[in-house]
Length: 505
Ligand code: BG6
Image (cartoon, rainbow, N blue to C red; front, side):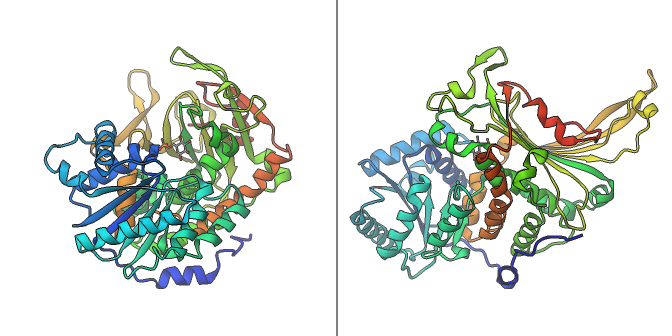
């Protein structure tokens, strides 16, 4: 059998493995493009504030928010405060609040106009001098994909990137809309930033339970035998949402579930589930392992895509008694849209550890519940009489969100009926005390730790796996099934189990 197709070139691996890991917090300037946008209010300001409460921001930090419209520094600071009141996971505390808000400055900015960059450069330098901090500059692009190129090339030509300290770039998804656009985007970014300066955010990699997967076996030797691949029958990864397209039709109708969730979040979850690390290794070695996994994904040819993939779109339905319109009736969606709001697939990792163990992945909007989880189903040499006695397969479940827990399902005999009943051994954490994904990721980017950011090679290999499916979509080789809003998705997704006696958990 051919394990992997060797497109993870050795120079990438060597570069990463030879790289010295040294992470420390230094004073810096944090420059936020898109500071008046939704992500900034809901996630980034609260994340910075919670890092502040934990004493995890640099001793001195200058934060410069950029947005199109004029706003004074004071008004911007009040806006930040309102965002904290609305979205911070911990209550805003009067003590220290003014000190925190005073770190923020605002600059009205048009990304397409050169003068804006000169003005920004001045503000950055003036604050650096005023605060006596080095020229360490962290740029965060929370902007539409069409602005990424223009911003990075102007950062370069304006001299903002010629710093005497370090520079880093955090970039939000989507990273391209197919293999070619992703490659082009990466090529353009690399004119200004080197790979180790680029932090591609996938917020699923910031979820504490996902980060835990890395050290799970190392920290829990008992799980090592439990996760013996010979005992695993299949792995299922679900990311279901109850929300619909919300106000994002403009973006979503072009992206669909495959680009919005699968190419990035779901494939990252596949990588994190499959890395299985019984020994301590460096963060760069982890990234190499992830690349090897995505490189070992068995390719799906577009002609065969219909055997491996089921896609769907929600029709009208109801959730908890509330009637909901179908996707095509949502504001801003094309009435003849063929965009997928549901995606499920069966995939195989052709490496010695996972050979022959199917991974089933699925994601959908307007499903019956919000849940992101990984379920490992164990083999059960069950006979008909076991089934009659109530014996069911053992399951190990990692619930990632909205709650976090690890559960093991075992069979216990009920003495009164003499039948077996499934019981759960459950460990759950208090999600209110857990840091949010953006807190963990911002902190990592500030100290220069890129373990939980997507390396370009991971992104490229993910697109390589996805590309034939996009072509199958385009050439109408994959039917688009309908499912009622508030359901578990299209019935056809069960066909992915073929003749196996599995079901979606
Ligand atoms: C985003 C997608 O990346 O992830 C959204 O663009 C989706 O469409 C969201 O709703 C889901 O994230 P979470 O953390 O709520 O599972």
